[in-house]
Image (cartoon, rainbow, N blue to C red; front, side, top):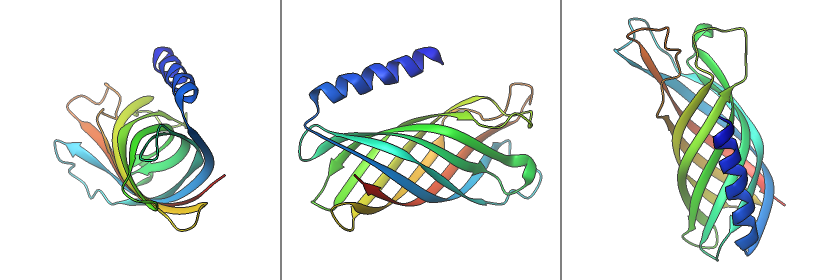
Length: 176
């Protein structure tokens, strides 16, 4: 974990040294999330509606290519109380501007669980994400993202059962 955080800091410092345009901002989002179980769950697994919020830094390399690094808190998992999973996340996206207003991006996301009371969930998870952003004005934007977990969110104690988060986010934010 320390190695991953150190690598993210080194990458951020390196990128900031070469960047032409740096923008900061805040973002909030509505989540629709659930868990994919393998083998299939033998109970009703409903979607959870939640929210996410955080801040970001967008490092522009050129007019069309940038890297967006974010720190966000997100409420995820399933609807049932025992399946809820809240995380502190660091999504990093390589982004391409298709026009002055439209940008697409994709990249990895690392996350740490933010609760102690619930056993059975692993502390650290890795996901992939893809998204699209539309600038309403020079500062205000809306976006949509899809994330899918690469790692099992359940502890190894849950023998024979694997669960991965998948989330759809509809966000809004402001660039400063």
